[in-house]
Amino acid sequence: MTRSNQITPDYYEILNLQFTSATLTKQQLKIAYHKALLTNHPDKAANPDLPTSLSADQPPSHNTTYTIDEITTAYRTLSDPQLRTEYDRALRLDRTKAAEREKTGAVFHTGLEVVDLEDLGCEEEGDSAYWYRGCRCGDEKGFLVTERDLEREVEHGEIVVGCRGCSLWMKILFAVEEDGLS
Figure: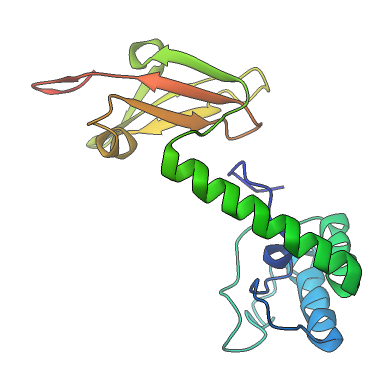
Protein backbone atom coordinates (compact mmCIF):
# COMPACT_ATOMS: atom_id res chain seq x y z
CA MET A 1 0.00 0.00 0.00
CA THR A 2 1.40 3.38 -0.94
CA ARG A 3 -1.35 5.57 0.46
CA SER A 4 -0.01 8.36 2.61
CA ASN A 5 -3.15 10.20 3.57
CA GLN A 6 -5.52 8.97 6.26
CA ILE A 7 -8.73 9.30 4.27
CA THR A 8 -10.22 6.01 3.13
CA PRO A 9 -10.69 6.15 -0.63
CA ASP A 10 -14.22 5.85 -1.86
CA TYR A 11 -15.27 3.21 -4.36
CA TYR A 12 -15.51 5.74 -7.17
CA GLU A 13 -11.93 6.81 -6.51
CA ILE A 14 -10.75 3.20 -6.49
CA LEU A 15 -12.32 2.58 -9.91
CA ASN A 16 -11.22 6.02 -11.15
CA LEU A 17 -14.81 7.15 -11.77
CA GLN A 18 -16.49 10.42 -10.97
CA PHE A 19 -19.15 10.40 -8.26
CA THR A 20 -22.22 11.81 -9.96
CA SER A 21 -25.93 11.21 -9.91
CA ALA A 22 -25.69 10.06 -13.53
CA THR A 23 -26.24 6.38 -14.08
CA LEU A 24 -23.18 4.31 -14.83
CA THR A 25 -23.80 1.46 -17.23
CA LYS A 26 -22.70 -2.07 -16.41
CA GLN A 27 -20.24 -1.82 -19.31
CA GLN A 28 -18.66 1.38 -17.92
CA LEU A 29 -18.29 -0.23 -14.50
CA LYS A 30 -16.83 -3.40 -16.00
CA ILE A 31 -14.28 -1.43 -18.03
CA ALA A 32 -13.32 0.64 -14.97
CA TYR A 33 -13.00 -2.55 -12.90
CA HIS A 34 -10.70 -4.25 -15.40
CA LYS A 35 -8.63 -1.11 -15.86
CA ALA A 36 -8.24 -0.75 -12.07
CA LEU A 37 -7.11 -4.37 -11.83
CA LEU A 38 -4.54 -3.83 -14.58
CA THR A 39 -3.37 -0.48 -13.24
CA ASN A 40 -2.86 -1.86 -9.73
CA HIS A 41 -1.43 -5.25 -10.69
CA PRO A 42 2.21 -5.41 -9.56
CA ASP A 43 3.41 -6.95 -12.83
CA LYS A 44 1.35 -4.68 -15.09
CA ALA A 45 1.45 -1.30 -13.29
CA ALA A 46 4.91 -0.39 -14.60
CA ASN A 47 3.89 -0.97 -18.23
CA PRO A 48 3.96 2.42 -20.00
CA ASP A 49 1.85 1.03 -22.86
CA LEU A 50 -1.28 0.84 -20.72
CA PRO A 51 -3.76 3.67 -21.34
CA THR A 52 -3.84 6.27 -18.58
CA SER A 53 -7.56 7.02 -18.79
CA LEU A 54 -10.72 5.45 -20.12
CA SER A 55 -11.87 8.57 -21.93
CA ALA A 56 -11.51 12.33 -21.90
CA ASP A 57 -14.35 12.75 -19.37
CA GLN A 58 -12.74 10.48 -16.77
CA PRO A 59 -10.82 11.95 -13.84
CA PRO A 60 -7.03 11.87 -14.07
CA SER A 61 -5.33 8.66 -13.03
CA HIS A 62 -3.93 8.36 -9.53
CA ASN A 63 -0.62 7.23 -8.11
CA THR A 64 -2.22 5.25 -5.30
CA THR A 65 -2.10 1.47 -5.33
CA TYR A 66 -5.23 -0.46 -4.31
CA THR A 67 -5.55 -4.13 -3.42
CA ILE A 68 -7.55 -6.62 -5.44
CA ASP A 69 -9.96 -6.88 -2.50
CA GLU A 70 -10.55 -3.11 -2.49
CA ILE A 71 -11.11 -3.06 -6.25
CA THR A 72 -13.45 -6.06 -6.17
CA THR A 73 -15.45 -4.65 -3.27
CA ALA A 74 -15.81 -1.34 -5.08
CA TYR A 75 -16.97 -3.07 -8.27
CA ARG A 76 -19.46 -5.36 -6.48
CA THR A 77 -20.95 -2.48 -4.52
CA LEU A 78 -21.31 -0.10 -7.47
CA SER A 79 -22.63 -2.75 -9.84
CA ASP A 80 -25.47 -3.78 -7.49
CA PRO A 81 -28.23 -1.11 -7.77
CA GLN A 82 -29.44 -1.52 -4.17
CA LEU A 83 -25.94 -1.54 -2.65
CA ARG A 84 -24.92 1.42 -4.82
CA THR A 85 -27.95 3.45 -3.68
CA GLU A 86 -27.11 2.78 -0.03
CA TYR A 87 -23.42 3.52 -0.61
CA ASP A 88 -24.16 6.78 -2.47
CA ARG A 89 -26.45 7.92 0.33
CA ALA A 90 -23.78 7.18 2.95
CA LEU A 91 -21.09 8.87 0.85
CA ARG A 92 -23.17 12.04 0.42
CA LEU A 93 -23.90 12.10 4.17
CA ASP A 94 -20.20 11.65 5.03
CA ARG A 95 -19.20 14.45 2.66
CA THR A 96 -21.88 16.76 4.05
CA LYS A 97 -20.75 16.07 7.63
CA ALA A 98 -17.10 16.61 6.70
CA ALA A 99 -17.91 19.92 5.00
CA GLU A 100 -19.89 21.06 8.04
CA ARG A 101 -17.04 20.14 10.41
CA GLU A 102 -14.58 22.08 8.26
CA LYS A 103 -16.86 25.15 8.33
CA THR A 104 -17.32 25.09 12.09
CA GLY A 105 -13.79 23.94 12.89
CA ALA A 106 -15.15 21.04 14.93
CA VAL A 107 -12.81 18.42 13.53
CA PHE A 108 -12.17 15.35 15.65
CA HIS A 109 -8.92 13.44 15.28
CA THR A 110 -8.38 10.00 16.76
CA GLY A 111 -5.43 9.78 19.13
CA LEU A 112 -4.56 13.50 19.11
CA GLU A 113 -1.34 14.23 21.00
CA VAL A 114 -0.25 17.83 21.70
CA VAL A 115 3.47 18.64 21.55
CA ASP A 116 5.74 21.61 21.07
CA LEU A 117 7.77 22.01 17.88
CA GLU A 118 10.95 21.94 19.99
CA ASP A 119 10.09 18.34 20.99
CA LEU A 120 10.50 17.17 17.39
CA GLY A 121 13.69 16.23 15.58
CA CYS A 122 14.82 18.64 12.88
CA GLU A 123 16.71 18.09 9.64
CA GLU A 124 17.74 20.60 7.02
CA GLU A 125 17.80 19.97 3.30
CA GLY A 126 19.41 22.79 1.37
CA ASP A 127 17.69 26.01 2.36
CA SER A 128 14.60 24.39 3.90
CA ALA A 129 13.97 22.34 7.02
CA TYR A 130 11.53 19.74 8.24
CA TRP A 131 10.58 18.47 11.68
CA TYR A 132 9.62 14.91 12.52
CA ARG A 133 8.71 12.55 15.31
CA GLY A 134 8.33 8.79 15.40
CA CYS A 135 4.95 7.20 15.96
CA ARG A 136 4.04 4.17 18.01
CA CYS A 137 3.04 2.39 14.77
CA GLY A 138 6.77 2.08 14.05
CA ASP A 139 7.21 4.80 11.41
CA GLU A 140 10.35 6.66 12.55
CA LYS A 141 9.21 9.86 10.84
CA GLY A 142 5.46 9.24 11.08
CA PHE A 143 4.67 12.83 11.98
CA LEU A 144 6.38 15.07 9.46
CA VAL A 145 6.06 18.86 9.16
CA THR A 146 7.80 21.07 6.62
CA GLU A 147 8.72 24.69 6.87
CA ARG A 148 6.06 25.44 4.26
CA ASP A 149 3.40 23.71 6.42
CA LEU A 150 4.35 25.91 9.38
CA GLU A 151 4.31 29.06 7.26
CA ARG A 152 0.71 28.29 6.20
CA GLU A 153 -0.37 28.06 9.85
CA VAL A 154 1.78 30.88 11.25
CA GLU A 155 -1.28 32.93 12.25
CA HIS A 156 -2.64 30.12 14.43
CA GLY A 157 0.64 29.00 16.00
CA GLU A 158 -0.40 25.36 15.72
CA ILE A 159 -0.74 22.69 13.09
CA VAL A 160 -2.45 19.28 13.17
CA VAL A 161 -0.75 16.48 11.22
CA GLY A 162 -1.61 12.85 10.75
CA CYS A 163 0.86 10.00 11.00
CA ARG A 164 1.97 8.72 7.61
CA GLY A 165 1.62 5.12 8.79
CA CYS A 166 -1.54 4.95 10.91
CA SER A 167 -4.60 6.90 12.06
CA LEU A 168 -3.00 8.86 14.92
CA TRP A 169 -2.78 12.65 14.92
CA MET A 170 -0.53 15.22 16.53
CA LYS A 171 -1.11 18.89 17.26
CA ILE A 172 2.17 20.79 17.09
CA LEU A 173 2.39 24.15 18.82
CA PHE A 174 4.97 26.67 17.66
CA ALA A 175 5.84 30.34 17.95
CA VAL A 176 7.41 32.69 15.44
CA GLU A 177 10.51 34.60 16.43
CA GLU A 178 11.81 37.61 14.56
CA ASP A 179 14.50 35.53 12.83
CA GLY A 180 12.30 32.54 11.93
CA LEU A 181 10.25 29.63 13.30
CA SER A 182 10.91 28.06 16.67
